[in-house]
Image (cartoon, rainbow, N blue to C red; front, side, top):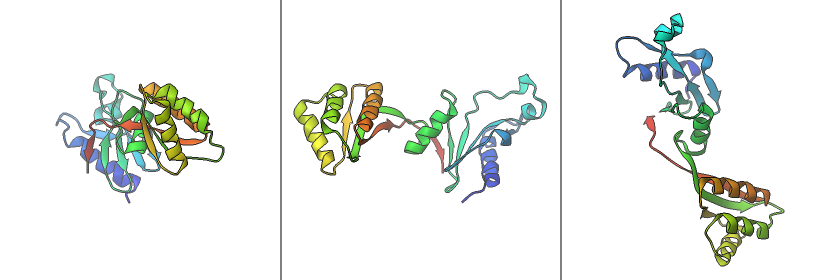
Length: 182
């Protein structure tokens, strides 16, 4: 188990490993975000952190996830808000994973409405009525199914609607390559 201070030191060593001799990179302690899994560290050039001069501003510096329990360092990205990377990391262990077009139905709660769930699958998946009924029956008997939908948006909508029918549903993510150091 790492402390925040130990994590900050490890991240500074990591970001400076490939930095040029022109300037040192530093963790911006005041910008650090803490989560249940660890921290997200932001960094900049020491020169910019010390002077605030725009010319010294580091660009393209993706935040770094540091996992508290293992010491794993994972680079996020700059194309999405940091919360998008954190959400993907929590769901999959990969901050670069993105929502996919499949839905996993892993169970149901009291009050589950099977006929409504079947309507949802008919509307969002390319399954016939018999296949839809078979899948919902399987879930009602304690099984789990994964259903492909027509798009990421359809998977998102199907997940919301299945949950409203008291089924345990989640949109699955697909992973993209991540910069992970162990």
